[in-house]
Image 1 (cartoon, helix red, strand yellow):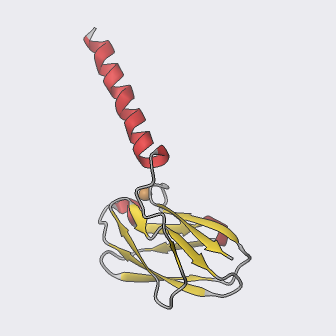
Image 2: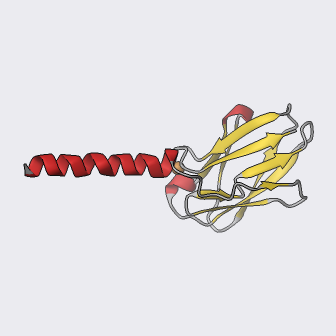
Image 3: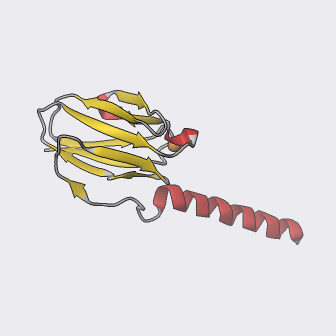
Length: 122
Ligand SMILES: [Cu+2]
């Protein structure tokens, strides 16, 4: 009886964790940000802020990541489709060069995909 209860709680906990990190409502601002010379992305509390970035395609750009989250989870930012990964310094701005690329959606994330964002080139 107790074992069943413990198992049930364990399963519910796992579902809650999965929901929170992968399936739940996006906690990041879903706003789209226009291109600016100095676009800063703050890495904090499980989200990139902003997490949707729009840039003109065919132009190289520089993103400025400010990581305020000390957890190792947030240490790397990865753009798999652009073959970019960058180690983010804590409480310091790290610049990430985005090469000129074709229009499209380029997701980016930390290495465990808990932090997630989308770069749209258009
Ligand atoms: Cu992570």
